[in-house]
Image (cartoon, rainbow, N blue to C red; front, side, top):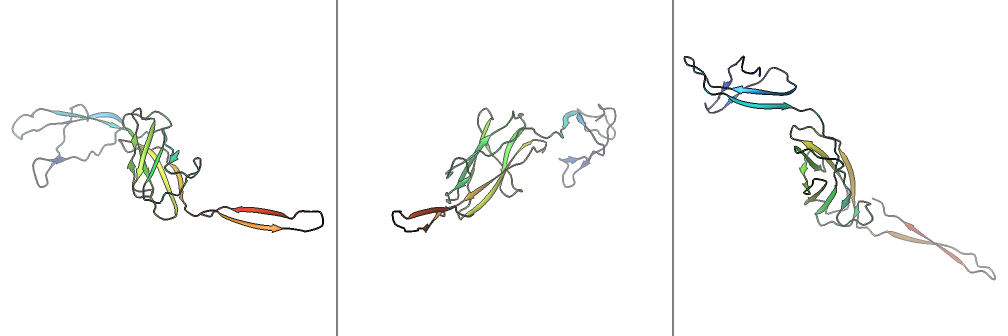
Length: 193
C-alpha cells in the first residue's frame, strides 16, 4: 500500500495454492491501492497486479418513504382489507441516489430486500408476497444502502390489515310531549385494531 516500496508475504492456501489471503494490520482512510506480485526465492518478481480500494464511511442522504399500498381502504391511511398474502408498496426517493446506492425494505428489521427502482431512480415499488392473511398490523421499514454497507435513515410505516366491518350502534333519547317529535341520535363506533 506504499506504492510498491515494501512487500510482505501473504498466506497461500490452506488447501490449495490457487488462492491467498492477507490481513492488513494498518488502518486506512480515503483511497489507496494494493499491489500484488509473485516472487520466487531465487529469482526475480513477476508482473504486478494493482487493485484500487476506497474506504467509504459516509451514510447515504436520500430516504425512501412508503406513500401508497395496494387496496388501500382510504386516502393513504395505510389500512387494507386485502388478506390474500400479497401487498404492493411504493413510494418516492427523496433525493438523488448515487450509482452505488439502492433502496431496501424490511418487515422484521433483520431481513432486507432490494426494491425495484424506476428508470430515473426517483420512485420505487416492492411486492410483499408473504403479507398477512389474517387481521393485524405489519411494520414496514425502508432504507438506502450503498455498496460499502453504509445505511441511511430508516423510515417506518405501519400497515393495518382489517376486514371487520364498522359497528354502528343507535341510542335513542325521546321525550314525548304534546306538540313535539321524538328525536333519535345515531353514533358510529370505529373498529379497533
